[in-house]
Length: 82
Image (cartoon, rainbow, N blue to C red; front, side, top):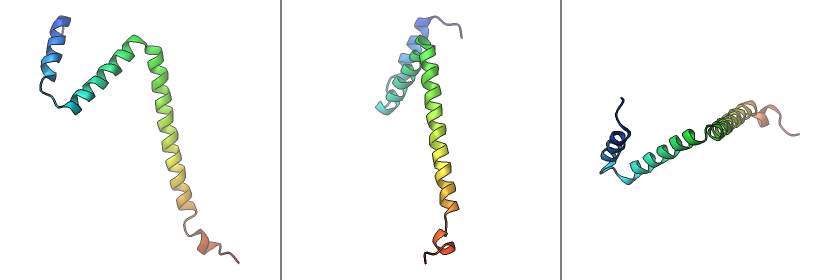
C-alpha cells in the first residue's frame, strides 16, 4: 500500500468511528507502543528485554514451585517425626 499519509489517517479515523471504549483503549495502547518503538528504538529494545526477562523469571519461579510441590508431596508420610 503506497497511499498518501493523509489517506492512512483518514482510514484509521473512519475505522475507529463507533467502536466501544474498551477497543479504543486497546487502539490507543497500540499507538503508544508503535510511537515508542519508532521514536526511541534503543529504549524500546531495553524495555522489551527487561519485560521478557521478568516473564522468564516468573515462569521459572512457577516451574520451581511446582517442582517443589511434587518433590515434597507426601513428605510427612515418608519421613514421620518421632
